[in-house]
Picture 1 (cartoon, rainbow, N blue to C red):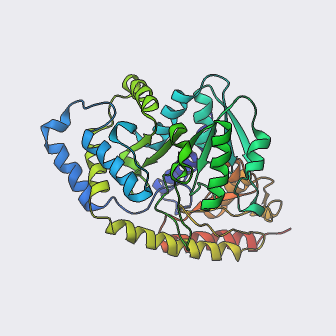
Picture 2: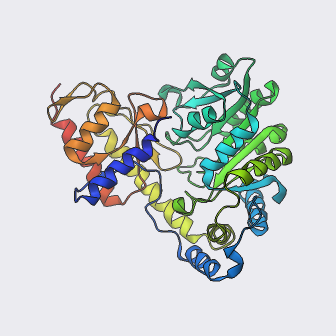
Length: 390
């Protein structure tokens, strides 16, 4: 199994920073804001309460499971009960639990590329077979029902769906989601829908939830979510999966042997996030939207770079095909993987190459960093490209 490319790039960038190098990283997908103070204070209070010092139910604190069910109705109009919720150690853990629960060896999972780098690995770990369906930039990186059907076989069991998307930032329209969900329902596929970026949509785009748009899927759908992106809580490791009771019960049994309950302190922090004031979320959203427009403009001003306008999450996904093969600082990169190394070495700017997402020739630039660093980082990259030789 390969190391997570996003975490590897981030680790290298941080290692250089710690050694005194002025590195600007567009690598890791995490907000640059601190966790809101009220959430931190809830964790402090939990630390001081002896009740938090012991095991709690594997599936999560009852109050948190209730809050997740309430939040799901509030934000998505999707009616679920606390018994349909399993609290996990982040959304990655929720995905791993879901695939381990649903898949038998050889079962196939349709995954649209560009995809989040963990998706295929999580499927493979569970004994499943990731089947990659390539969506093109010309169609806005959205897959069509026809593409999915063309890639399906009699072993297809699950469709993995994500909107807003990491790494492209695309948001599926309600009609497009209905068409794709309708195909899944007709074919009897399970749908695993990743909604971790649900609150990060911009420019008039609307976020929808698959089991709400296609209610007939509810008994064959697992929703994966968490507090990490919306509330700047990536390090707290609290996610969840929502699904039919038999799936949640089976996944809970699995988790009882894997990790038991999620850290109680982190769970109380998540409870405060879901039930408390959300004004800080609006502040972060405003900053991300401003940076989104900024990085989109700056990247498109670089010769050989083209970038679609992201509608959600906090990533730009430009094509760097027009830069490949040029002489940059005396080196010629034939792939975006090589280009990422050249740029990091030459101008101390880190981004994640498209190979990590099943999309060679592209790159993911996270704009979850300060405005000043964003401008400086893109300008360094631009200066390197403009000074290149064909």
